[in-house]
Length: 493
Image (cartoon, rainbow, N blue to C red):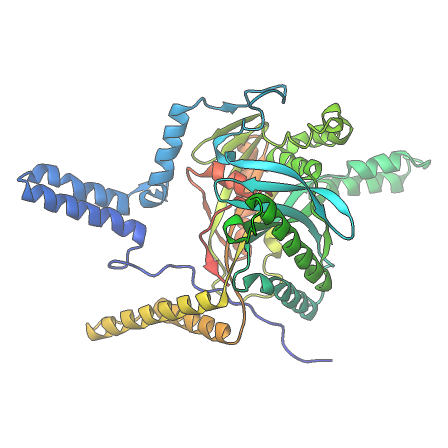
C-alpha cells in the first residue's frame, strides 16, 4: 500500500491586479472621467460645473448602497430601475392558454433570446430527439446531460484524489485549440423530499402500528424527515456557433451536429472516469427540470406533465417558461417561489482536500442550486496570458522597490500563483476559467432569509466567500437553470 499523503489543492488569489493607486478598473474609470470633466470645464471657464465631475466620481468609486459598492451595482441598478419603470411589474405571461401566436416568444427579460429546439440526433446507434437550447444573444447551442457520481463522499481520500484526477482528464480535451466548446456548466440541485414516500410504503405493509418498536420507528422518521434531501447533478455543454465550420450548411444545424459529437466524446470519457451519465435530456425532461428549479412548490403539478393532454400533443415540452417573474434588488420572485443568488467572490486561500465542498453540497434542508461554470482556455492563449501577467507583476514590483515601497505578502503570493500557473502550463496541464454562483429558493421572504443564513454558514465552512448579486437577481436565477446562459467572469484553474 502506498504511504503517499493525500493531495492538497490550491486556488489562486481571486483579487485582481490594481490599475491606479491600488484601485480596480471599475473604481478608476469614474475618477478618471471626473478629472477629465473638471479639466474641460476649467478650460471653458465653468469651475463650479466642473467640480461636479470629481464629486460624482468619488461617490461612485468609494460610495456604497445597501452595503454594496456603488461601482459594482450602479450599472445593474440603473438597468433594473429602467426595466421596472418601462415594463409592467411583475412580468406576467400574456398567453395564459400556452397557445396561439406569440407564445414561444413570451418570456421575461432575463430569458429573452432563448429557444428550446426539439432536435433529432444520432445517439448510441439510434435516432432520438433531444432538447437543444439555442441562445440567439450569445450565438450558442447547448444540451444537458444528467450525471451520477460513484460514491465520492464515502470514498477514501486517495480514491477521491483518483476520481478528481479522472474528472480532470475527462475535461482536459475541451481545452484544445480550435475546440467549438465554449463552456461546460455543472449544477447540483439539492431539495428536501422528506420521508412521505417511505411512510406510504409502510402503510402498505401488514404490520402492527401500535407496538413500541413501531412508535420508536415513527419518531425516528420524524427526526429524519427534514434531513432527507435529494441531489441531482446536470451537465450543460455549450458550443459557440461562430467556432463551428458550417461547410455550406445552416449554422445552427452544423452547430448541433458538432455539439452532439462533443457530447458523445465527453460522455465516453466521463464513463471511463467512473461517472455515470444519462444521455441528453429530451424536451419534456428539460422543461420539467427548468420548471422544478424555478418553482419547487410545483413538484406535484409538474410530475403529471407526462400524462397531460399538452404533453400528448407536444405542447408540454415547449411550456418551459414561468407564468410570472418580478425581479427586485435582492430577490426575484418566480411563480410561487423566491430566489436569491450569491456569487462566489472568494475561493479557499488555504490548501484544501478533495472533499472541501462537502459542507456546502451536503448541507441541511435548504433548497439551493450550486452552479459552476468552466470555460476552457487553449494552451497557447493561456501561456501567453500567464507570461503577460507575470511580466506586468514583475514590472510593478520593480517600480515599487525603486520608490522605496515594500511588497506585501499578498503581492508576493500573487506572483507565486502566476509562476505556478506558468509552470503547470509548460508541463501541459489544461486551463479552465471558472466562476460559481449559489442560488437559494424558498416559498416566502422569512423562510428565504433563514435558508440563506444556513447556506452562507455552510459556504463559510467550505472557505467560500459569498456575495449577493445585488440588482442582478434575475440573471442569477437564469444562470441557475440548465439553459447554457451564464456569466463569463471568473478565475483560472
